Length: 189
Image (cartoon, rainbow, N blue to C red; front, side):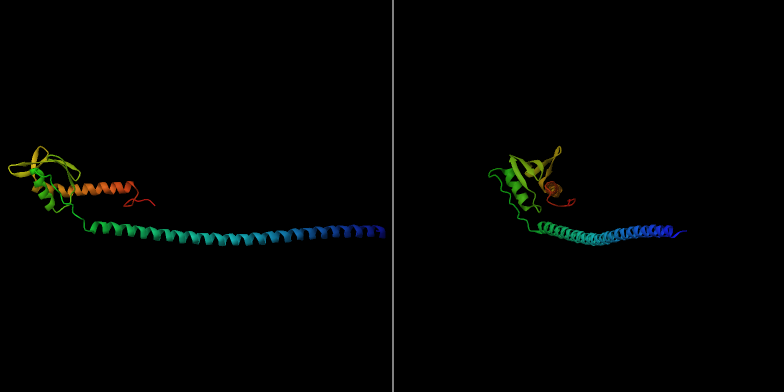
């Protein structure tokens, strides 16, 4: 081989080495850039993971607080309900129409009856007792109430139907309260 060929071969090899070195430098630059991107991504990923944990903790705290507030509200509702149940109720005295013998006798019985069932006179002998329309009259010197096809003494009628009427009134009040969304069982949050 001659020297010229060897020199050309060496020059070509040196060019090839320089090109490869340039390519290595270029790839090293890309590698450094990719490593930087990877480092940024890992940093962002860790920051996002920490933010996710922070948000999950906040959600758990808010959920705990919501449950605590719901429990407090339920306890307060129950306390108020119990207070309302146990408060002394003012009895409304039934005042009869003067001169109406049936109404005067009705007043005596209603004002001495243990249960405070509301009653309104709607006409002579006609009343609304709680939720029930009734007819009363004096028969054989006794106050009687029409029940079905016959009559029942007022002394029997009041204990038989008094609590029943109070229960109906209470059910209506509870139904009206729940329809207005004011609480009670089945309340949605």
